[in-house]
Length: 229
Image 1 (cartoon, rainbow, N blue to C red):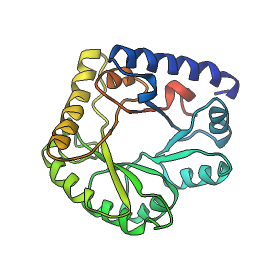
Image 2: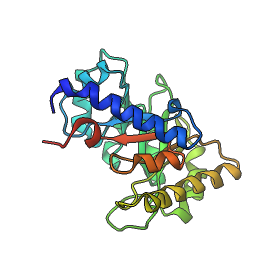
Image 3: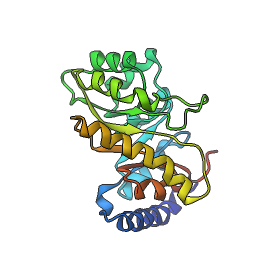
Image 4: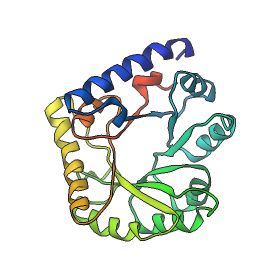
């Protein structure tokens, strides 16, 4: 995609986010546009940053580290949104501000132990497998409370909320139903004494449904940058 097309795409996306937020009785500022940048070059991310995008998500560690280095002079917030392997936790803990797909206590413990005391706590979301799909990661909904309680006790990380990648649906009502499950689960955790404020849910094909169900971060790739090369 040409960087020249980005301002129009970003404006249209922000307008759609604002309309969905208004329909939910919320402000557009309550939703963070997270640019899912997998397979897109640093030059395109720089162009997006020039248009006011500040949050970028990477799924592949080495690719993400290269972009962080290339754009290190810009005040950007970097999110790791891919599956987290135990042998990658040190680099994630060193380089990123957020980790969105924590689904095992072992991974959370490694991120906690490897996060430098010189950095702010690493913001963490627990990935929940809302549909129980074998092809996707995530903790089972019924096991989320136990994992959340354990992760919340760890130093150097801040448990912020929940994340999901639900089945692909075309109908708005069916999209909303999956996101409602995550919203309900977050509410249950907070009712039990949690202090979670983040729902990382919704991508290019369903982010409006996610916002209607309370998403605070939407992870947008194709609708922002176009198809990957």
